[in-house]
Amino acid sequence: MQAKPFLKEIQLKREMVPSFDTYPFQIPAIRNLSSLKFHPDVTFIIGENGSGKSTLIEAIALQMGFSTEGGSKNSQFQTHDNSSQLFNYLTGVKSFKRPSDYFFLRAESYYNVATYMEEVYQNDRDKFKKHYGVTSLHECSHGESFMATLSNRLSGNGLYIFDEPEAALSPNRQMAALSLINRLVGENSQFIIATHSPILLAYPGATIYQLDDSGIRQVRYEETEHYMVTKHFLNNYTEMTRILFGE
Image (tube, one colour):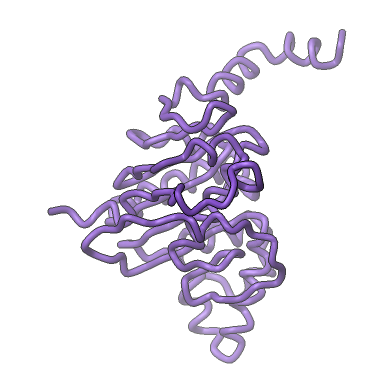
């Protein structure tokens, strides 16, 4: 019997939902959700802005015991309260074995997590550097601090949930992140990632769920808008810029 996936599936307790006409249950992807099964290695959740992917990834993280803003399970802090209540209506189907490491990496609130972690380790900077590879995350660029966390803080045998990690990363750094994800998968880790990045989405064999007005469906990499639009633009950038500029 295999330990992974640590999180096998999430299920929406539909009978408990007070109304499918109120946020976030009126979002088509949520309204049509019954259950979602996860790949043992990497699962991607994709969709246009407003499709509900960040709402869903946040709810999965909260259901697993993370704080809204991210970090490890021990990082229980909150600078604002704007999360939906979706997590209260989800049930997680878990493996018989727990991971030894957990981390929720969220681009929009990573600054707050970095601040919190530096305060926690303010009297033990050597331990902080051991965990993150740098003496201060705030003395790095946003992208460098992201990579420091990926390269040093994530120790393997973990469940890692990411919300748009590419937001701070250049294309080169996205490829480096893809390599790090693969290394951690080889160290018995599972990833659930909401993303817009066609680079990250190229991870071989990953499960990709598309959220749109029809609900949630599994798609192949080459079927994603991220792949098709990016490929078409790069192959026809001169014509595309003329069209976009109305020339």
